[in-house]
Image 1 (cartoon, rainbow, N blue to C red):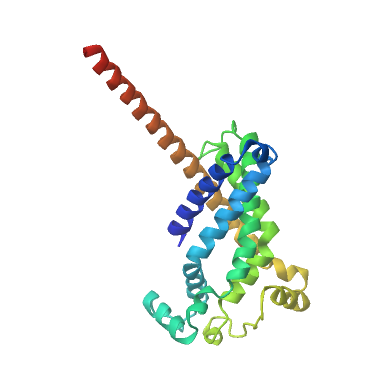
Image 2 (image 1 turned 180 degrees about the horizontal axis):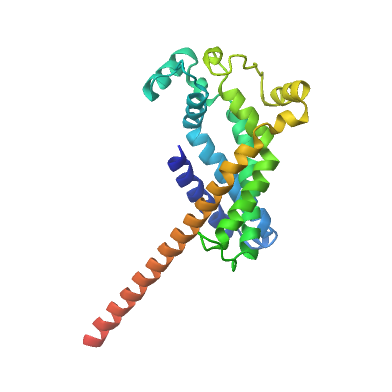
Length: 244
């Protein structure tokens, strides 16, 4: 899931960014850099989330299993969901996922570009780059702001006919995203919306740091390789001309 999601996310992000750069100057000049990053990040997150959502749903359901395995294998999970819930079962909670990922990725890339500019010269071990620090700060900010929707997404993913067989056998039934948020607030209070935030940040912050560090280093490496190839092409062309 992460291989597919990460690849689609960064391809879409650069694609939407380049698309905005191709807008007429009268329109492009009116879009602030922060808004450009937010739009590109939000659109990229929506595309990647929708395309890989069935895998995200399966990941959550496998994680919710206890000693009594609901799905003994990935193939069995696909077959059981298709039989008992139909095609719509693979996208249970998608609205919550898109609703959380759009502001999350928008905020993440907007804040990352901001922090990256200020931390560009910062040296951190072991990553030795401000890219990592910017990734951590952006992840903490975006994850905290959108966590309630992410919480509802995971609870909606374990709905369905198999919910009584998971580790938590008393999983409540939610009729939708907003009703789910309201039900959590009534039963658990405001703190209920942020249950598990600390663990989520411990996971997301270093993951974002490594992701952005590897992304920036790989991108710079590819750009350097491309420049070297262009230089060799110019050298070869000059050599041919010199021989003539």
